[in-house]
Image 1 (tube, rainbow, N blue to C red):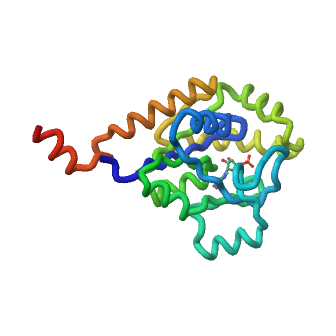
Image 2 (image 1 turned 180 degrees about the vertical axis):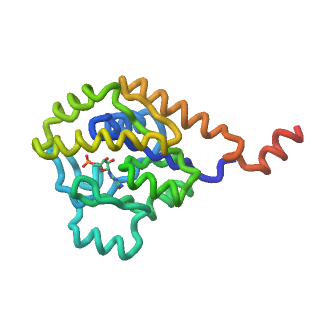
Length: 203
Ligand code: 5GP
């Protein structure tokens, strides 16, 4: 009935908890999450091929030339890109795909794939956002300031998204996103017209 999987694009400011929400979504659903390539160095517990593909800037530029990325962007001085062929293959197989990417990247994807589902994760408050970034302990004081300063600007882009989900608790944010995805699957314009005519209307 559904010809393809749903492309679910999730963005939000640093500290909103996108990563934790995405992890929880993956545990509870048969979603596939795209692993991005980045020129950033790995953080403590990050694993090559699981969190990111860590590549050099030279390789990143080569891959831009070869049109390997669905989208790419420079965020906080590092490059990040979504490998195109894997994402398209999984979508074609009918499985839903999550892209956890920044706003610049999401807006590029929206131009190319307007049928995607664009979800913005918000923190419950700016104070909580500051606490979460600080408590992460993985940022230098400079990067902490940059991320917090960018958060205000990033939040102003929420209107470009289809849905805003406040991450008050991971479980409730997860439930809201699952409900959005289920509702989206029921949209008439995502159904195969032949199925509606032959299986339902002619019954
Ligand atoms: P971090 O360095 O904290 O892992 O990620 C920094 C930002 O880059 C986050 O907002 C994250 O969503 C974004 N990001 C991660 N992968 C990609 C990607 O492939 N493309 C884009 N445009 N942004 C990404």
